[in-house]
Amino acid sequence: MTAISGWAWLSSMRWLRVFRNRDGLVVFWQNIFINLSTFIFATVLVRLFQPAELSMANSVLGLFLVGNIAIAVIQITTTKLIIRHGSLPDELWKTAVRLGWASSLVVIALFPFWQLYLGWSLLMVLCIAPAIGLLFPLAVRRGALLGRKDYTGYAKSQLVDNVVRLLGLPLAVLFGPAGVAALISVSVLAALLLTPHFAVVKQLTFRVRSLMTAGMSIVLFSITYTVDLILVQYALPPVEAARYGVVNLVGKVPLALGAMVALYFLPIMIAYNEAGRPQAAWKAAAKALLIASGGLVVCIGFLALFGPILVSIVFGTTYEVLGPQLALAVLPFGLLALSGVLLNYFVAVDNRLHTLPLVIFVVFQVTGLLVMHGSYRQVLSYLLVITLVLYVVYMVMFISKKASKK
Image 1 (tube, one colour):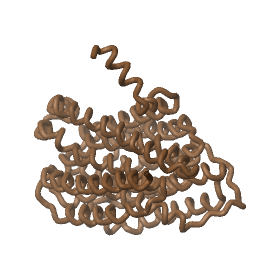
Image 2 (cartoon, one colour; image 1 turned 120 degrees about the vertical axis):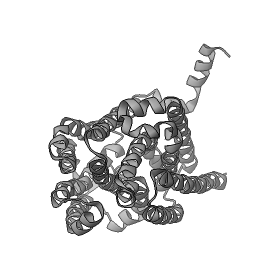
Image 3 (tube, one colour; image 1 turned 45 degrees about the vertical axis):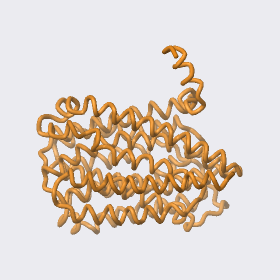
Image 4 (cartoon, helix red, strand yellow; image 1 turned 180 degrees about the vertical axis):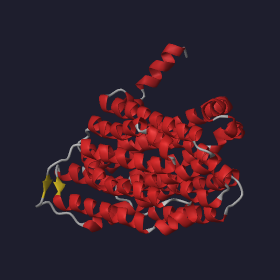
């Protein structure tokens, strides 16, 4: 097979059509820019901060990411309501605002915990609390954009967040971890103000319990996604925690790829399920899984070849020890990304059986990270084992779902 005929064969494959339409390209390039800007932001922090400050800044980012992914509960609920009814219930918006206020107050009330275990100052807590609260109404607006398949509008909302964060980097230079926390709040506020707000309908029925039903697995997955950055600040010495933070940063690349693919396919799977076409929803999920798996293989191959050079140039000599192991080190994050794609499918088709394996996984993850006080290698080895188990369980459930629909 010649190179030209081989490319023609690949281009004819149906699963690649996602990159040949306008929406697919918008999602693709939006995520390329967002992840690149996030990588630049985190890399600058690595260069600016000493290991102790870096691990503290990473724990702030970890808390923000927990909130950022946890509010996907509201985002997915909003997307479903838009697809079903074409409009938003007034009660959903009010619930999001109430949850936002409550979350900010909880973050502030937990100041003794943040100070005792993570070494945060009161200023850091007061700076990050608004960001957590603003995420909830922002999720409603972004979920409405996804429900309408307005990927361009969704991309603009994400870009505002990231551009403001990049432009505000001098805050981090001047005020350290507290500046990072303040910068996050400013960027979220800018995104909220510039994201379109759709008209709400008071007559449309909405039950808060539907948030709990649809969202428990998303909340749990958000814990698996980000709690490690917080716990290693407590469990590991500063140098080891900083090294783990660098590995986590690189590992966010396959995680972001999985999130990008899941984001594109989620409204499609929901629409198929709502139309009574579960088989089509399953095929869309299989396509998403195939694309995410291909991206993971490319990431690991690139890091295997260029990992040492990447670490030396980007992160400096302090972290050169990570270079040769980087490809294997990001594997747990890649497996978690693939599990996330499958989880989005289970949520889209209202399959609740997937929650139990996730609960068990979270218990083992948090417990393991709390008792490990050795090195970043020990943490990564443990995460590799438990993420592999979760992925295998989800794959068995996914394949059995296919068999049950025949």
